[in-house]
Length: 454
Image 1: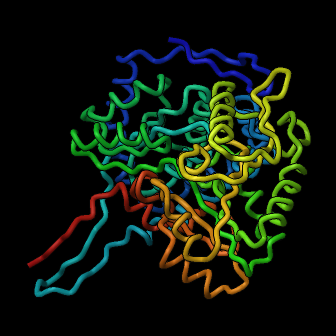
Image 2: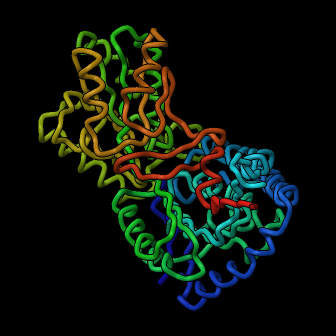
């Protein structure tokens, strides 16, 4: 079955690649299993040299990689360049720190010697999405390789060009060809390989339904999995906040990657006493963002696919039918391309998609509350728990809310939520489990081994 890459700015097919037959994928998995032990025997320093070479390769090919993302999923060139640099950063980060993160930890007991060692598991299957087609992969790949594991990538079928580009960068840097490969198959087929004996663990970034399916399959096979799923992040702006600065940050977060981010600000939880001013600021900030050709000077390109744009518009219409008010946007533009305008909904309430579900696009949902307690209740009134933010002039107050009251894996004060190679990243509730990045991330796919010498 062919896998098509379609330019979302034009609707034109830019590439067609044939899906791999089952016997070829079987060969990839078995080859990775055979290649992994030799890689695990390399020293940390040797693996670090390869990671640094990957970082160098990414930076040297930044323009081509940014153009590939713009062509396949509509990311602006500036955003693409930033994504490539972040991928290089995570490679450099684990090159520098992996040995320390995986060093044996002595524990005093009545034995002559007792300690915890960290050993690689084997082959990690990564099922990755299209929205950050390089970053999502490298935040799995860098720690996976640094820990001595092998990797097999099943990327989203609309970004197969990005998948093959990642493979080329890795191999050019010295990653053995069989140790890391991209397999080209439809998304619904990826789960069937979880139970293959060559696979030791699986990581998925994707939707909550996809996460449930992967978790069930991995559970049946008794294999470790890490799931980074959807989010409906609440950004709480308290009554004492600097409204202009806070709401500008909220809008910036909402429109990163044209709103196609699991940790984008989805629900703006705002003080009712400042309703009129909040609506004015958000509308003006959203209106300033220019929508257009990702190869030009636009702030926002198209959504990644036309069907995703149509689904988003249906969610907006459903909100309006249930009582939300439209302050900006909300209309599908004429002409070709999967474009959607920055849109602002107010009077958003439970029972509306913008309140209950994840809107994956440039739509800000405004929810007004009377006080801090109600703001926290609204922020936590979601099945998701990926990220959250709080804005206030009282930093100690904001920190206490973020640390003790908000139910999410990443909580930021006076800033928008973002991933960082130095910090663990992941969610709770329907946003998944496990962590990527930092020391916690590299230890997800290792055998935490107790060693005792009598």
